[in-house]
Amino acid sequence: MNCTKCKTKAVIGLPRHNAAFCKGCFNSFVHEQVARAIKSEWMFGKDERILVAVSGGKDSLALWDILLKMGYRADALYVNLGIGTYSEQSYAKVMKFADAVAISHGAKLHLHTVEQEAGAGIKELAMLIHRPTCSTCGTIKRYQFNRVAIEQQYDVMATGHNLDDEAARLLGNVLHWQEEYLDKQSPSLPASVEGFAKKVKPLFRLSERELAAYAVLNRIDYIVEECPMAKGSKMLQYKEVLNRLETESPGTKQTFYLGFLDKQSKKQPAATTMTEKDRAVLHPCASCSQPTTADICSYCKMMARAKAHAAS
Image (cartoon, rainbow, N blue to C red):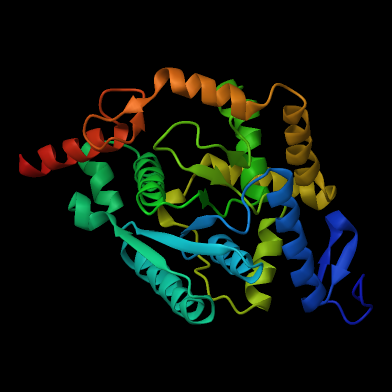
């Protein structure tokens, strides 16, 4: 198998593109896909400051690497969830990568440790307040990512969600006809009100397999294991179904998700609708001042409950 571009020996085949690439051409392909994503969704420019949410996994570390190599001003935030050995390993992977890019690009890593603020790791915290672990985790990460982006004056927050993630999420939203979520399932969500950072997903044109190959070829050391708290997740089931379809018909995920985005773009711009709606219902949290629909945001309520249970 030879490279589609330069005709040297290929290291990876991409059935959905009917192509194969050597390492150099594959890296160019990945960067081109990210550049197309950034341009098509008006995500950010070279003069803007970007905060990348990193977990120690292949997608987020690859995203940080790609943005820096493309010349963007990208720092990162790691939230240590306190999930035993898993968090210890993911933290080690993030620190190793952060040390390297600090030297080569002057990039900075921000850290937040859940246990220091909540007094317990994510699993113990979820049990303490009687909430599902993934729900508790999502609330904490969304809050901390937005908080750091706003406090440190970043223009945009970027996450490593890939094509598989977005196609699986879309499948779940369609199966349950969650129209509110469908309206907001965009790779770029604007800073709708003061206190909310713009959020983007520059990897939505790349598959999980392609990003794993990018990480391996570029010697990015990442944690391979799935989060132990994600066992039994509906998202993993949706991914498995889509993987079977992709095997039988390469390009299924791309057609499904990019086709949805194309349909959405022909409707009234989601950004305008969302901004008007959010401005009507959001106001500062009485405790932390971040935007919320209630008097107290869900994060502050959760922390208050955790402290009350711990004290009793």
